[in-house]
Amino acid sequence: MERDNTWKTYSHDELMAVEQINNSYKACLDEGKTERECVKVTVRMLEERGYKSLNSMIEEGAGLKTGDKVYAVCMGKSVAAFHIGSRPLEHGMNILGAHIDSPRIDVKQNPLYENEELSYLDTHYYGGIKKYQWVTLPLALHGVVAKKDGSLVEIHIGDKEEDPVFAVTDLLVHLASKQMEKKANAVIEGEKLDLLFASRPVNNDSSLEKEEKEAVKKNVLRILEASYGISEEDFVSAELEIVPAGNARDCGIDRSMIMAYGQDDRVCAFTSLFALLDVEKVDKTACCILVDKEEIGSVGATGMHSRFFENVLAELVALTGETSDLKVRRALQNSKMLSSDVSAAFDPMFAETFEKRSSAFFGKGLVFNKFTGSRGKSGSNDANAEYLAQIRRAMDSKNVAYQFAELGKVDAGGGGTIAYIMANYGMEVIDSGVAVLCMHAPWEITSKADVYEAYKGYKAFIEEM
Image 1 (cartoon, rainbow, N blue to C red):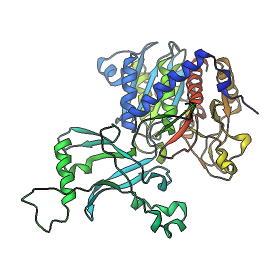
Image 2: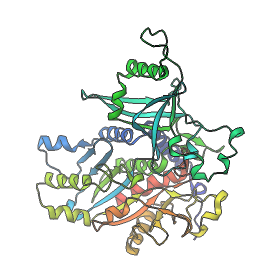
Image 3: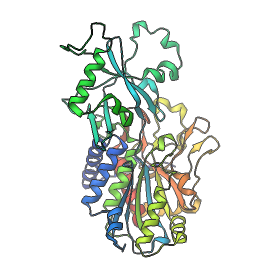
């Protein structure tokens, strides 16, 4: 079933709207390179639009009424926001869910070492990456260091023009004959993804012995103490992430695309947030939940498998004057959800991996996946036909461009999302998102038209379902 390229249909005003949404999206990508940063961006935008913290409402003993806007944060890494509708919560919600963690390289807890007068940070990669893609790139260091006195030091190095950048080195091609014979997954081993951090030894130190072997590391520690007030021991209670340095950029001579780090899945997260913020009134309560840890199985307290969302909903029900667990269960079961995660865009350079009739294409709008998983639909949520019909009706009512797709050929591989987790409550769930080229690479590419249609689609879902 052929879909028109959406660029052909836009009026002048719509083209202006496309650029406006995408400029806002790029700004969010630049500010939110880690899940903690994404939550900070999200909370700021929510509060600017009148959303109140759930904790503050509980402390005030405030009740919950139609039109109220409330949010809750889990450990600084996940956030859920609610626009309360006119119908009781037990009638269900319209939920937009996405994840805000992205593949990256993490710094270990005892990372700093010196080797042949070069200082490195020891690392452990996070999520599904092609390790060879992360070498010889300018890299940035983002995260937090928690000190024993309770203070939190934020680290952002590498994205400002005046900042230094970091790198993971690779073997020069002149000496790489044996390396080039290896399989792609072994060309760069995980233990060789350590970050080149410094090379200058400490100077003019009378306490430095002639046989001192770690003068570069000692200089690094001096810089860290002077600049951030942190010691080597503080790395133990740090969460530091290595991400590509640089901002989101327009891609293509026609500026029709965006190239940026972390678009899986922040392209769905931020467009879902934009949609929630732009809805004025709702019949059913609208919810946007942005979670951590999807790239490693949605585990832990900040992943979708945790009880965070369920607990927050119980608090909301309590603020309506009820304490019934049954009403919480009804609210979950009667809800409808878009599990918003990216889809693989058809790449003509690797056409043999795709089944063209069931592929997502740039410029053809929001992508729906009836099921994900791998091979025999293993690990997937498989949406009901009746729910798909409702989705089609909602999208068509708001003139949203959309397409249906699968993730590559049946036996080629596969992937999962948070959809099956929420479906455990008995709610209707379907995967939806934006088509991406170079998914899970340090730099990913999306179509501006698809970003805009995703925003329109998520807004239509809230208003029409």
